[in-house]
Amino acid sequence: MSKRILFVAPSGSIHTRRWMQQINDQGWKLYLFPSYDTLWIDPAFSTPVYCVPFFFLYQWLHRAGMQRLFGVVYRAYQLLLQKIDPDYYDRRLARYISRIRPDLIHTLETQGAGYMASRIRKKYFQ
Image (tube, rainbow, N blue to C red):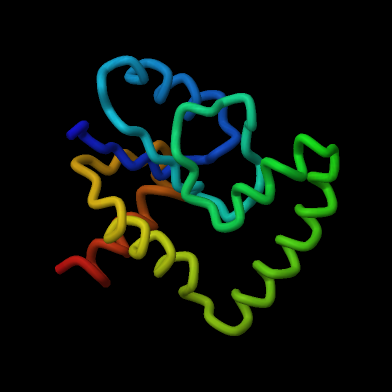
């Protein structure tokens, strides 16, 4: 079974893409959890498994040219969840960590990704 790396990083960043492309052919299974709950995802970059709810719908609408519509609906969904439960994004990362069981978690930005991963570790995995 191949090793798994979970990247917690800005999903639309060229730096994230370059980091992941450097190890793409090394036999790792790559996962990407966006450090910010946005839909700025490069659909041409198909290497990682995106840890985003409704990503299959996003891809389909992107091919149909309706990604803006999905972005508006998703943003409303996201704002509603934040009002109901401010910790939902942290719990979502914890759920993906439990489901994926990565061998390595790599955070690509301290402010957005590193602090969130640290909070998750202290809160759910100790």
